[in-house]
Length: 438
Ligand SMILES: O=C(O)C1=C[C@@H](OP(=O)(O)O)[C@@H](O)[C@H](O)C1
Ligand SMILES: C=C(OP(=O)(O)O)C(=O)O
Image (cartoon, rainbow, N blue to C red; front, side):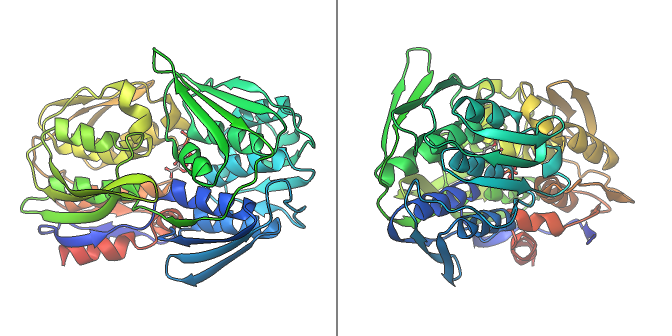
């Protein structure tokens, strides 16, 4: 364990550039590994989760090499040509790696064993096992549909039409990636829109993919299988889920004024910016542009007096990983913030509703934990008292980073029991934070 106390700080000042988007980085490696020829990726996130994806694609035959910081070169094998991995695929802490790679293996004539850490081994995989089994894959999983599991792919797999029972981009992507090497048309029906990086990137690599939006907003995504992907040069935008911690920190610490450059603002990811602006946060998007087929801007963020809001559950999927950071903002706002429709937070790296409720309460915040959300009574801008003892982060990087920024806005600081999980998504988080408050 690597504990650290995050102490009250002076204003955050300066310009930073957060590392590449985790979701896009995973997909860039996977699709490059399935294209015949050489793809180049720049701005790749070199966090442990993405490195687990890179190692798995190597184990299945692709050449995946680091040239320089964030610069990677991938020689793909072609869709349909993944090789039988010799040993188990170690997914570490990464749900995205596990579920998307299960989709890829499902339509190849290979079998793979998936293992992960204690947190990942608690997470539900039934949600991907179910559609992939319908496509012909055979899965033998641990109790409750969990890791470790062995998946034997089908060749040929059977195309399906699948209506998502949970709003999950990982489930959607698993089925689409399985569909890539399945004869015929595989269709995913998505009643609630989730991040659409897979759709954008599959099209960019030349897959035959069609999205139609029905009158009620339901998205119907159809992919024609046995596609040939063409190698690409991909520039990965900065991760809005990493920017989230500095957005909230700068809003909370008096006198702060920072610019976060190159932040991805795909509408399926930008819910936190919307919610923080509704709370009164001064967040200005400068220099809007496109990077790697995704909308991006530089965000200027200044300290602001925040007011509690009712967060519309309809925007939850577009900020699903940002709720821990939002809860911190709410704990220092004036008035009440109410969140609902967040059952999915209970099956992330930790139960993020329970763990954040306990951690923030230990730091002196007033929290009411409901079945599907938290209700938070803010301090009106006064710092939180802080914690005498370390708070438990349960192998969850986002809990650790959220409580770190809460520490900046506290009286006695907040001690986090273990900072090591931060490296899964944001290895340079502490260095960047220390630089901004120096
Ligand atoms: O597709 C992705 O890259 C992700 C989807 C989300 O998970 P779910 O699909 O489980 O909601 C998100 O929480 C995760 O961090 C990354
Ligand atoms: C939920 C997350 O990731 P994953 O599902 O890939 O473990 C996250 O990064 O917050």
